[in-house]
Length: 385
Image 1 (cartoon, rainbow, N blue to C red):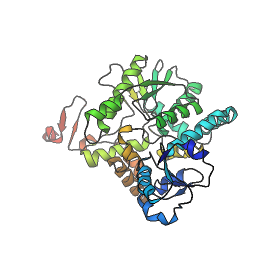
Image 2: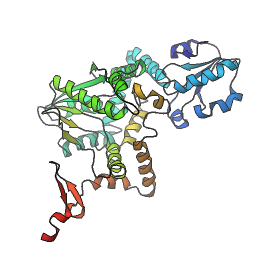
Image 3: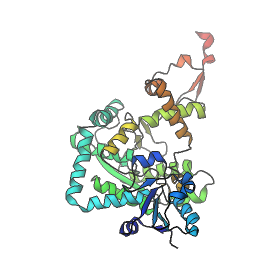
Image 4: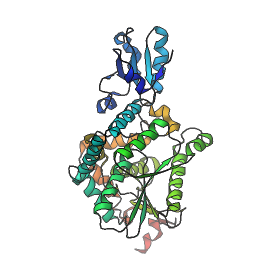
């Protein structure tokens, strides 16, 4: 029996059917198919008593992995049960494509998305974006910037902010909206393209075989090698296109999480810099224009506009993505949870973490390194003071 069906096949099935979202409750409550009930995959087989044998059952997962496993378990028991190919993102893709087919609805959605950035979310998004650019001098006259879009909420918002800056900013600069396809599956790739179309972002796509290379070269977690190769590919393509800067979508929460991770797991004090010169690509620079924007505000903007972006498009970690995204269970997820707990005790925790790397007093630290790699110890000149 066929156990995997497309979203189109499910919607064309006119019989009475049961639709079940097997993702975590928190993800289900954020967004799901309107007819779906929620039974998390870990508890699914404990709820067989609510599953009918006289009607078809369709399952939405993250990527399809767990829903396929459930189907393989229940089909031999007489259930007509299917896993939706591509998981919940196939539904998001279908929804976006329907919106794109209606020109009037598409235009209205596009205008609403842009208006929300400079109106409703102006203090949280637009003002913090321009503040970061001015505070850290991220853009100069004559720059040509490659805005790197991964397809997630952060980079897509960054692209829209740059479009507004192009229209209303005073800087004389150029922007290229660049998407690298390192080997995304069809659902994720289509979602990126559709979102760019819906939001009228004129993207330039280039392909690479990074996923294939990393898959062959690594054992265990491929994330570190993959990230380095992707960064290098972005620099290389941007330089080829005449750009002198690449813009990445790291936000305020990424910054403070990096600070705490460095202390707890790296034994060092460091931060994610708002800009830095490339060590491997001469005259190239990396900038982070979302540096002062809170992730919570990005999510609010996304939910307000009912936008659906990909979480993690990595083909190599889809087994993790099916459990809710590769971030779950990671060190960064642990730190995110820790900071959240600390915030409940004091609302100033996050701001203090951020400010801690701006208020470093060198005469109160045991040792530090300068940019040339030289280590300075407080005993070096202790007896001379």
